[in-house]
Image 1: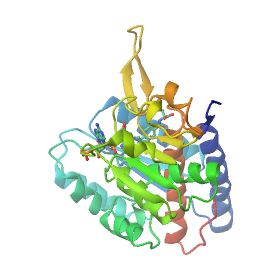
Image 2: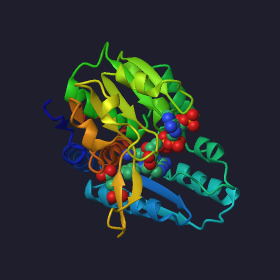
Image 3: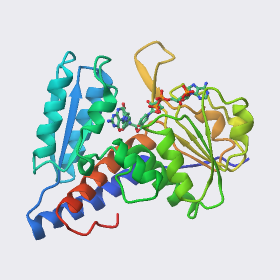
Length: 296
Ligand SMILES: NC(=O)C1=CN([C@@H]2O[C@H](COP(=O)(O)OP(=O)(O)OC[C@H]3O[C@@H](n4cnc5c(N)ncnc54)[C@H](OP(=O)(O)O)[C@@H]3O)[C@@H](O)[C@H]2O)C=CC1
Ligand SMILES: Nc1nc(=O)c2c([nH]1)NC[C@@H]1CN(c3ccc(C(=O)N[C@@H](CCC(=O)O)C(=O)O)cc3)C=[N+]21
């Protein structure tokens, strides 16, 4: 069996960010507008801090304005909602992202739904969810958007393919399934109550794993030649006991012996997520100013 080809999310995202930067420069030149992204982080989760820093850096590298708002872990719901309201009203801000998960005392549905739909670059607002589900123009969640872009680049037309999404979260699994359905795949959503997960995954031409369980999908579940998209980001202790390393939800070593193509972790879906966040911010900025959206 030949080895799977690697879907290089790092290279793909660098390319996409380059195209975004070109459009951002043109927006500035021709319209005097700079797209702005505001990220709100509540609390001090170290993984979230790393992620927010990397987003801010890439936002600035693309020529956009980055606004970071760090609030203490004990921030009240009222204060957070006031912050979102302030960003909703700020004309320099075209995209707003509230980093999830929020501390337990905060109602994340309430907070997300208080974001201006037109600035909801995560695509998590109920209105954007409904627009996506009904096939109308919306802002599409970044992680699934990045996955679809890589799938189309790898496979071309996705219509008629059997796709299995493992995981049914609002931020990955459900919107992923909607996008695959919109591409005319035959979609199955598996989750923790799925009776025969191995048998379900074995049918799939496209497997998207978004579970949060390190290396839970073994190569023996993969149909030979299938395309495997690994969304999982799991921090596990290194074999030598020193520090941590990142692994996906798929057992990469065995899956790459069977799959046709596979995304690595790190360097797969993660970098594409951030590039799509920048793309959504550019889209939101163009829509806010009545400027045609670029084809990216
Ligand atoms: N690369 C990126 O950009 C991003 C990566 N992630 C990563 O993706 C992974 C998933 O994230 P997220 O969707 O937020 O996670 P959630 O914890 O919200 O959802 C996990 C899903 O997996 C299902 N599940 C759990 N155990 C099993 C099992 N044994 N068999 C089948 N299904 C199972 C759950 O089922 P049930 O509903 O029945 O409980 C649930 O639907 C995580 O590793 C996360 O870090 C997340 C966002 C972005
Ligand atoms: N409102 C909100 N929107 C999100 O999109 C969101 C969120 N909250 N909360 C957390 C998850 C997780 N997520 C990641 C994005 C990029 C990488 C990423 O770039 N990963 C690198 C590695 C980074 C590292 O080394 O730690 C990679 O896979 O190569 C990871 C994880 C977005 N999320």
